[in-house]
Length: 289
Image: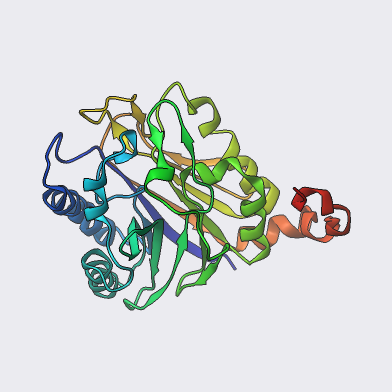
C-alpha cells in the first residue's frame, strides 16, 4: 500500500533590500513566509521546509559582526517557538533553517525540526562550511556542525537535513541514508555561474545512491548591496530513482509541492541492494588524513 506524504518547499527573494536593523529584516522575512505557510496548510502539506537562513538575506557575502544579532537560540528563540505554534496548529512537520547562537560568540548554520504536534525534535548543524571567493565567507559566521547526521522520526516519515554546501560531500548524504532517512531536505543559497550546473546533478545522485527522496530549496533574485549573483530558484523534489517530481520557477517566490510515496524507498532498495553490497571494511583510507 502506498504511503503518500505531501511535502512542500518555500523559495523566496529577500524582503528588505537594505537595512541596518537586522531584527527588522528578520521580522520582515518571517512575515513574508507566513502566507506561504498558510497556503501550504490550506493545500494539505504535511512536511514543509524553508530556504537556508530563511530569516535573513544571505549575509555571508560580507564579513560584518552586525549579523550576529540575527542569530537565535534553538529551541528557545523567537522563530523556533513561532514555528512550533504553527506546526501544532496545522498538524504539519516544519524544517526551520535559521542562524543559531549556542552562546555569545558561538554560532551555527542550523535547521530545527518540529513535529506535527509542535514538538521540537532536534536540530541539524551544517557540517561543511565554505569560505571562498566570491562572497561566501561562511567561516566568519559559523562553526562546523557537531551533531553528526541525525534523522528525525516525525509523524509522517523519517526526515534528514543537509544544508547547502553540504551537498558537495557524498559522505554525509550516505550517513543520512544509513541512519534511515526517507527524505532529505537541502535548504540552500546558491547563485548562477558558480554551481548552477551542479544543482540538478549532485542531489539526484545522492537520492539514487542512498535511495531516498530529496527536497532541494534555493532562493530567488539578487540581494543588495552585495549583488554576488542571481539566486536561481528551481527548488525541486526528486525521487529515489533520481527522477524529478516537480521543479519550481527560476525567479518567482513560490510554494513547491509534491505527493511522495515514501514506500518507494523500500521498493527501490529491494531492487538495488546498495546498502547490502557496501564494503565499509575497504573504506579506511577515506577517513585518514
